[in-house]
Structure formats: structure tokens, C-alpha cells
Amino acid sequence: MSSLISKIQACQLQFLEESQVSSSEEARQALQKKYLKQILKELYADLKNVIDPAEKKTAGGLINQFRQELELAFSSDTAVSKVRQSEVFCDPTAIKMQFVRGHIHPLIHFTQKMEEVFINMGFSIVYGPEIEKEENNFEKLNIPLHHPARDMQDTFYIKGSDKLLRSHTSSVQIRTMENAKPPLKIISVGNVYRVDDIDAQHTPMFYQTEGLVVDKGIRFSDLKGVLIQFIKTVFGENIQVRFRPSYYPYTEPSAAVDMSCPICATQGCRTCKQAGWITILGAGMVHPNVFLSVGYDPKEVSGFAFGLGVNRLAMIYYQMAEIRGFYENDISLWASV
Ligand SMILES: [Zn+2]
Image (cartoon, rainbow, N blue to C red):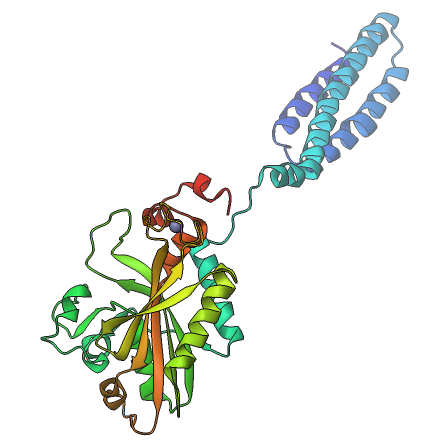
């Protein structure tokens, strides 16, 4: 066998070996340059020096075959490279087309809407802990240990401590009054807990918003003005509001606040259970005992407080039949929101 034919065969073997260990794009490009530009050029130059015609023909055929093999190998490299480049170019668009952007939970959306109304009336938003001292949740709100109101607000107690999961956000009002002097104009918002079985209208955890205004000379008419303004801003100018006498340990006098049903305008429908009116708020003038428990002088200052269940109000706003919908992942429920 001539030396050139041996050389060609050695180059072919060498290429196979080098090709197997050259996977990166840079390595493939270097390999292509080496074999297509340098090695082939050398082999064709050697071919010119072969004198024997038969040997020249065989060697020439082998070099051509090797060149075709090289071209084929590197052409598939180019194809892969083009695919890679097109993937890099196209992928972000493909992802963008398939991406469905989420949105804020309707309950939070409604809460923010309410907060905005109160902020525009000059209220500040305050927050407090959900694990609360028992005295802040009950005693200081004029609900002593023996009081039957504790049954209505039964909650979850932390074993071996004086702490519980707050049953209302009124505890934040106590904390605020203990740390600040009047005048106060605050809204407290957050999760509260009750020992309620889950049904269409109840969950053991729900959202509550409560308001408190304390200053010299605050009257019941101030309370009425704020609540009527709030209800009409959220549900519409045509909504009627009425105050009925009620009882809460921490306010005196107290009132339950009804609004005319925004669905049927007092004609009676499923949402208002045919009553035409819906009770949405509890409110009243702050009880003197509450002021005394935080070191305020009830002869010096007066104030009003109100509280509402955000979930229940949001159910009316979104016309939902069940409170459970807020905590289930049925997105179709929110298609119209
Ligand atoms: Zn109705």
C-alpha cells in the first residue's frame, strides 16, 4: 500500500476520533477548518506527486470520498446550528403566546377597593397580630370572662398560654389606642377566626374590616355620615341605608346597618333572601368602659366604631352564592370579575 493511501486512511480514522470528542460549536468549527482547509489541501498536494497512474486514481478516489464524508459531517453541524439559532430567536415569543397572566384575588381586590374609600375620607390603615392576647380580644373590649358574647365569638385558643386567634380586628383598635392619643381615625383589616363549621355562608377564617374614630365631640351623626358615604361609594348612589337598634358589648348605643338589596332594590330576591334588605355592618358609639381600659377619659373624648365581614360584602358585590368560592380554585367563578 502506498504511503499516500495509508495517510488518507489514517486521516479518516483520526477524523472519526476527533469528531467524537468535539461536541461544542467552537470545537466543531475548529475541526471543520482543520480538515476541510488544511488536511484536504495537504492530501491533494501529495496526490500531485504520485507518479503511478493506478495509484493516483485510487488515491484520488479516496481523497474525494473523504472530502464528501467531511462535507456531509459538517453540513449536519450547520443544520443543527441553524436550528439552535432559530430556537434562541423564536422561544421567547412562543412562551409569551402561551403565558396566561394571573390577577389579584377578588377578596383582596374588594378589600383594597374598600380601603381606598376610607383612605379618601381621611382614615389610616392599621394592622395587628392574628395571634392575640385574650384581654385585647375580650376584656378590654368590655367582654369579661362570664359574658355571653364570648359564645358568639368563640375562637381557637393557644394551649397553655393567654393567647388566642383573634375573633375580630377590634383588638387592633385596643393596641392602637394604648399607643396613641386622640384624635384617631383608623381602619383595621385582616383575617379573623371563629369556631364555625364550613357551610355556604360560614368559614372558620374570614376577612374583617373595622373602623374607629375618637376625638372630642364625635357624635352618632358622624357615624351615620361615614357609613352612608362608604356604602353608596361602593354599591352605588341609589342604595338606601337604614340603622336598627342592636347590641354589642363594646358600643353604646349600638346599631345594625342594613342596605337596600343592590340586586333587586328591595323587591326581594335570592341574594337578600326575599327580604329586600341586607344587614352588612355592626356599629355604635364606643362604650366608656373600652375607653377606660386603654387609659382614655370618656368625659373628655367620644368616638364611634363599626365592623363588617369583608367576605359577606364581597359575596353581595360579586353576586356569589357561597362563601366557599373564595377559597376554591375554580377560576371559571371569576370569569366575569
Ligand atoms: Zn334582593
